Length: 324
Image (cartoon, rainbow, N blue to C red; front, side, top):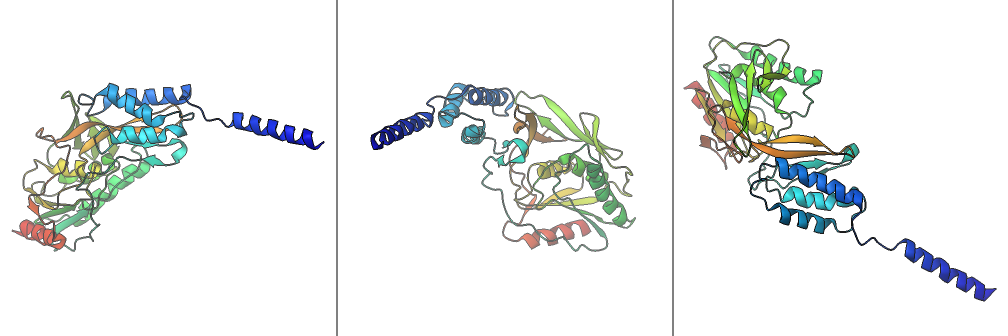
């Protein structure tokens, strides 16, 4: 009996070892998933003309190794996103189970500053980050709340406005644009420009933020300011990023406008969303932001008056400039 028990144990042990032997090659599922991801990057990345895609693909699959499931490819996806070199692309796992981010630019960071207590003759509007879906009523409500704030402060004797973008890390630019629109003169306020020079416009008109002429988010009760040519001081810092930077760019080229604070984060680029087979989403940087005059950015925005070691000095300088 004892001899039979030992033999049976050995057989079970060997069977278990065979069953747990790790795979040595990548599965078809994992391989196909990475190929789709790399294909999207190759076709749409803002840096697609400067990347050696054969080398890129080889290294991504080297990181993937013998991945068997989509979850096993996450390290390879992280490697791919990092080596796109745009600092802005990212990947959201299926069912919201986490996000694989890119690295942030070196100049991105800081601390959120308190609201400004401006004189009665200066209007003040802080534009916060916004992650609302453009198709929801909440996005329109966000825009309307900003417009209501402008309306409540507008007076015939107003000297100008402070638009505070400090700490605005981005999200969805369209509710922000629709909300701050009354302070933007003109129609087209910026462009997205791809690698080959193709452009699409962003604009504001009658309460609506427009993408290439089509409304995306609309404030239900749009307001017209009393003096559209008033001075505007824009405050920004190292946490003004992505869509926050796009709103700053919307003021570039506007008359009677100056920028105060510190350089922005450096993500003045646009992401396009792609849905993947498992429900994950790839947000891929595919264009750079440009102002109404066609000046391209893509990196940090520099203030007209810099106060890198004196944040409160930026506020006081902005107030004094508007008053005088």
